Each structure stands twice: as C-alpha cells, then as structure tokens.
Length: 445
Image (cartoon, rainbow, N blue to C red; front, side, top):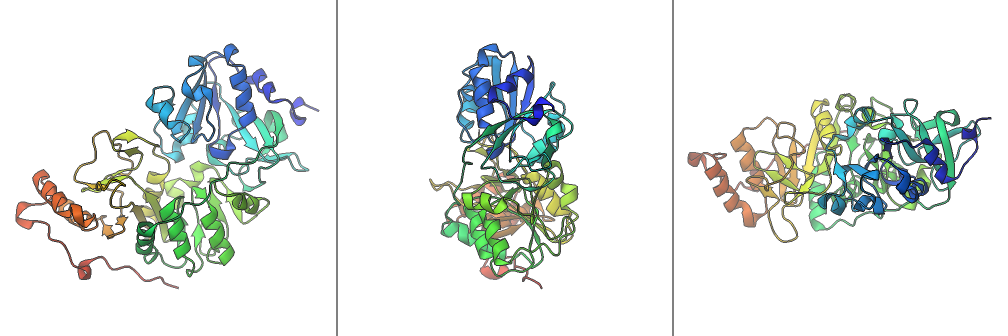
C-alpha cells in the first residue's frame, strides 16, 4: 500500500514542494485551507514558490507580501481577498480568458496542484466537489495533493481523481464558504425583464451571480425546457431545476444535464449538489470553449459589465479605470453565443453608478481594460431598454446606446459623440419613441 492511500498531516505537503516551484490552487471553495496554512507556517524554508489561483476566498499574510519572493501569489482574477494586495504591488495579476487557464498553467515550472476534495468513495475516487475549473483539466498530467473536507459535496462529471493519482492527501472538517444570493433592486428587475422576454423556450443559458442574474432567474419561472451550460452554478439555477423550468432536453451537448465548471452559493446549494447526477462539473477548457458553446442552438449568454463606450466596447474588469477583477469567462461565452444558431449575447449594466455617473460613456474611462470587443457584443441592456449592436454601423451603435443611457446623460453623450465623429453632424441623435425600440422575440414552444 502506497503512502498516498492513507491520510497524512497537512504539513506533509512540504515533502513535495521544491525551490522555484509553481503551485496551482482551484478557485473559491476549491482552496485547501489547511494545506496553505502549512505552507505559510514553513515560509522561512521556501525558495521562490508561486501560488497560481483565480478568485481566492481567504485573507492570508502571503497575499500581503509578508514573505517576499519566498511565497508569492499570482492571481488570474482578483477578489476581495486580493484586490488591495494587487493595488499595493504585493501580488501579480495575469489577464486571461478563463477557457485558456489550463493551457497557461501547463507552461509553469514543475507544477503541483493543491486542491480541496470530497472524501474518497469505496473505489478510491475523490472528486473536486464544488469545482472542476482549471484543476480538473490537469488530472493525470500533474501531481495532486488533496485536502479532503468532510463538508465538500461529492459531485459528478470530469472532476474525479483516483487515489493512485495523488502524491498525498490530508483530512479537514471545515464548512464551505457560503454566499447568500444578492437581492435585486428595481433596476435589476427592469434589466432582467428586458432580457427574459427575448429568451425562447428550449434555450441553453449561461448566467452568473448577482442582482441582475438573480432577478432574471426568478423571472424565468414560466419558461419551459431550458438548458444550463454555464461557468457558475448558483442557487438561482437550483430553483429553476426544482421548478421544472430547466430540463436540458433540447441541449446538444450533455442533454438533460446541468453543466458548470464551479459552484458558489448557499449551504442549500452545496447540499443539493451532493451525489446529484443531474449536475456535471466539467473542466473549464470544455465548458468555456466558444466552439463547444456554439454547438448549442439558441444559446443565451448573460454577463455584466461596468462601462460601455459608444462603439460597444465593454470594460468589465476595471472600475473607474482601476483593476477590479479580470477577464474571466465573459468573452468566451459572448463569442460562443455569437456562433450559436439562434444564439444571443447580452451585456447588462445599470445605467449609472451610485454617484449618478453614466456607465455608458462616449469613451471608456482612462485606464479601463476592454474585456469584450465591439465586434463580439450583441445586445447591451440597461433598465432603460435594449441596444442591439451586432451588424449596425458606428453611428447606429452610438444612437442605440444613447437611447438606453440614463435620460439625464443622453444630451451630453450625443454632443460628445458628435465631437468624436461617432455621430455625423448632419444626422444628430434624436431621442427615439417607445415605438422605435427593438421589439422582443416572443418565447416559442
């Protein structure tokens, strides 16, 4: 019997950590807390070790640069735990589309994957539980050290790993981080209403987490035979499955299955995921691959942004010109929806910030990063309406976006658009009536 078949203490991971090594850690609840604690406790003996991870949940000293180059964090998506550290130069940020993460990680130095997992079954199989993400794509290619958490749900899909494929595993008994659904406000509900009436029955959805997605999923309660192929599975999706709205019967890829690459939500969601064969956790280089997404008919992609300029460029990873998150999967799904027969992509945002500043800008704020390019953006939605951009001229785009900006900002946006040459002087913007707004397509059976 190999040592990997019996649990060890968390600090046993140090037997597998070498100088100049890259460690790969899954995002969110895939993070092995006790194993990372052991690394930090031994930081004085480490030499140029890097931890590569998207969306860290736990605050840690090494994220604040406490150990210099002995142990340093490399982020691929900032979170509340890492945002300030990045601003202070204490961690690195690598911009990347989520779908490309496994390919990038395969280029790192003698990598070792550290991951949380569900307890092994009678056949010696662990699962990565709430996660598949980039880590599942590396099973069989890189060594794994697992932290088996009694509270991690056992899930189905392609995130299983056999005891023979791990260099060691340890036990933990820690509740998962739970995230309560955001409560939508009136603007979120108005945005959701504009999108919902454009979603046909039988469509396959990608939808995230937050006020607008939660409002949207609540408003889908009377739709039929929806499918889910999404980056994140949340409580809103659980509710649609239990209501019978999501059946997946018309999906081309993995019919009848809810497909996702990670889960984040309440304890109720984690309990629902446990031993639930209706949900498949699959690697991100499959789930987020635009070519895979495009095989679905009527694929609907819904993503949020922070600013849109009058050409349709979406800055979704910066706020007021400062880095806030990273690219994630927005461009992956927007591109896949564009190629899907009958597919639609929606970029959603409230028309103004909390201070009243317009989120639709003549030009993006200086320092903003374009996440989804203008040629890919299909629809932009605010509480004031829907702007259809794909296939329209620069001037047509500018007019449509001004029409869905907050009324207090429309005249100024029109003036700026004219000065920039986006709107010809002879064809100045005129506020359109409700009769000229894009008409939704009715849900079909």
